[in-house]
Image (cartoon, rainbow, N blue to C red; front, top):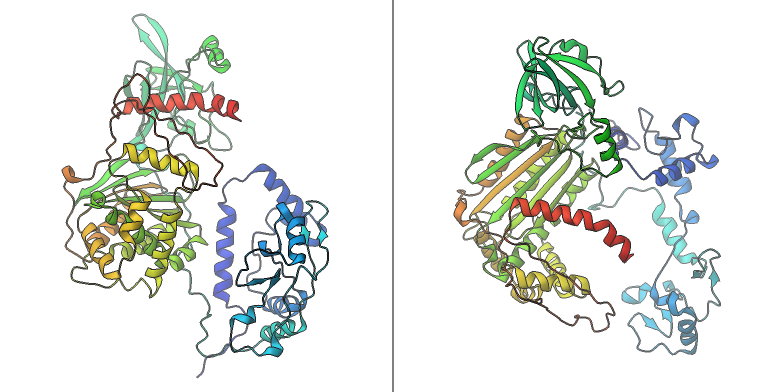
Amino acid sequence: GKGKKTEGLPQWIYDELKSIANVSYRYADEGDVEEIVEEIAENMALWYGLPEERVLDGDELLFDDVVDNETVKDLLFNYLTPQNLRVDLMSSLFGRESNFDEAIKDQRKGNVGEKDEDVDEGVIKPVHDHFEDDSEDEKETAFDTGKAGPPSIEPRFGTHYWKEKISTIIMQQWTDASKAQLPPAGFPLDLPPKNPFVPSQFDLKPLPTDDAAHPLVHCSVKVCVCVGKKKAWFPAVVTQYKMDGVHPKVLISYEDEDEKWHALDSPGNYEKFNAEDPLEPGFEGSLDKATFKFRVIGVPREGEGAVLRYGDADNDDDVEDGIAFPPIPPPSKNLPKLVYDNNSLKVWHLQDRKFKRPLGDLRIKVDCDGLNDSALNQACMNLFCRLCADALTETCYLASVCELGSSLYTTETGFGIRVHGFDHKLLELAKEVLALVMSFRGREGRSDLPPAIKEGRFDACLESLLRKYKNYGMNASSFCTGLRLLCLRPSHMTSNSKLKAIHGITIEKFVVTMNKILKRVSVEAFYHGNCDINDAKKASQIILGAMTSNCNHVGIPKTKIPAKLVVKTPLVVGQHSVTAPTLDPQDPNTAVEVYFQMGKDNLMNRVLVDMLVQVLDEPLFCQLR
């Protein structure tokens, strides 16, 4: 028989919205304290009608098990009506606040300067004038600042505004359109598809048994060791815990950087410690069947790494007062591990131990062969990323309402992809993004775009990119930065050179260029968060599958991977200066950049420069402000 037709919002849509609201509220990032107080105060207002027990979440969550269709219909047909509508229009056509009085005076005199096609003597032409098939009797006199009289002034901010009643003809048109009716045939508006990215699993993945969590990990301790006939207490840090059969062990790093595994005595004594009842300084225990004793000196705060204390009151007080350098704890054992290295694909993995939330972050860096050979190649890469992002708009929107974000961006050697959010459906979104991106590969002999790129979107994205190139450097600060990079980076192409290279490009030329750029690629990825080694291996297979799905994959040899070169600045007594006027002659701003080159890049120099910036940042900001 025929299926029963139901009225109202489908139950699956309500369940989906309810689930998304619960997830967003439960795992929301910590907000600004002032904003939270303001929101709570608003929720306490009488007109919200929230009961006391729902002041915190009443405006965020859905509580009923089924949708209240009667209330939905009541809101739609009795409240969301043209009669309850207010329209706010804001435009410089009505005058500018900075010279409002002069502009109104000029308009009333008819002195408006050059006439815009939609402006005549201070009058805005009605929209109907743009359409030939509108009859004369339907046209309404447009709003005229010259006839409207003096404006009202908002008392708090002094904003000028006019109030005018909406015409009866427009109101009748809106009223007719708001009546309940079936949509016409071929109407493009439809219910959304079921969202495939709604997460339902939020459990934290267990840590590996050889590097598990324990209350002692990252604690600062003092270990009692016999030195000859005397006992001495040595400061140390517990850096790792593992289950070795029935005898759990801890790895202790001593002050002299010596590391040693010790069997942990009485492991049951630590089961009582948790987030509500944490381990505290002063706790004592033993190791290696009471061969060594230890005392906890310092406990890390939530999310903090290893801490090292000497347990010496004078020294600890000096560190606290900022007159002594704090002891440096041993380097972290929790570093990314390489889980896949083959076919010019490297995948790194690190399971989260700090934030302890069901979130993940997958970052993919794709190096392309020959990207920096010409301005055309770089411009086509910019257009490629825009096309892919445009084609993924609907997919990424569904993911975004489920707290799953993604981005696609160009780099100096290729392009990058980032997918982040709840880990449950993260790899599914990554798979869709990669499938679209890699669909541009293996199109030798083709002159058309992949099917996912809709008709007309190439021209729209190209127009947007050309506009960006034309506007680049109009700001003095960005123009200054561009000049510095042009002097230092051989691979840096100016926006003007890319504009000339891509202007008037055809789809066929774009496809040929991108096929050449993407013919040989090398990929490196990093998966971090609530993901174990199996998730990382699954991500490796998804990336590899996308790389090899449309072509016989050819990677870039390690010696051919594009290098990020920087020109060595010659040593001189004074300085090298570059001075240039801004592109916008009306721009009153001036930008100055001072660049210091510290020598050839290495890890130690980077650490020292980072520390120098950290020390200088606050006093420099305080002086400049």
